[in-house]
Amino acid sequence: MASKIAPSLLTSRTYWARPISAAPTALTASAAKVPKATVPLVHRSVNAHINGAQLSSRTNFTANNTAFSQKRFYAAPVYKASPDTDVTQPPREQDAYKLQHHDDISSRNFAYFMIGTYSFIGAAAAKNIVTDYLVHFAASADVLALAKVEVDMASIPEGKNVILKWRGKPVFIRHRTAEEIAEANSVSLSELRDPETDADRTKKPEWLVMLGVCTHLGCVPIGEAGEYGGWFCPCHGSHYDISGRIRKGPAPLNLEVPAYDFNEADGKIVIG
Amino acid sequence: MASAIARTTYNLFFRRSSSYMVGIFASAFAFEIAFDGAADRLWDSVNKGRQWKDIRSKYIEEQ
Image 1 (cartoon, each protein chain N blue to C red):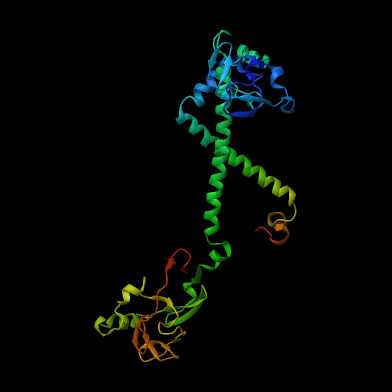
Image 2: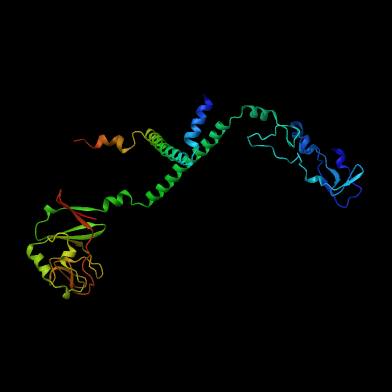
């Protein structure tokens, strides 16, 4: 080994390098333990060597150098059967043990098991993140509790108005009489500013449900008032008829009808 | 025999990707139930006597 490191007579370039004292064939457990600091730096040439009588141009610095070599970490032993082939590293004792006791199936099972375990924990975590985000965007319980309002239909006599608060806005409910329904139906669409039939605005003609917000500037109209017997907005004088349609004044649209439903079993109107 | 068990396990769960994925999702489902249940039980034991379900009987009489 040391002879290879002799300074060359034909040196054109010189490098400082560690000796290749532990070439591949000489790699042993003891050689691997040599601390870096004890390996001396020697003056050595590359590109040219006097090797006996012949001139060779091997470049030794590319050879495996144990001072920087990486320990083997992979588990499966891959040695060749015969040591006189180009085996680069003789088996260590623990590798020989592995060679004898190596069980292909169970080590493969172990790898798959570990990957599968990480996978299902990761899948559960990913599902949790997604559901947490979706729940975060959903309405909270206090909002949902205020989102619907129920009113008992039996508590509203015929020909009377009720005003409820729903989502911060007033809601008018009128239990209309037969004459009022007939009056609402008698109006021809051509004389309306915002043409809507009475049937479009009610689910049951006896019950008129609408938002009590004037479509002009948002005042709350007064019930049973105005020239058309419906609602009258005191702010700027909009007149609504008995179906809540705009008939006179500055408001551009009919009173808005919210989403509502009838709960026949309990006799209730559910708004929202 | 250990090797026979290992071989059966391999053939049942790992050999085909489809069965491997089914196993992973089934395990994720079971793991989530077990994990959530354990976390809830831990929470309830730490907060024993402080939650509505613990003090409900003091305020509401069952009819």
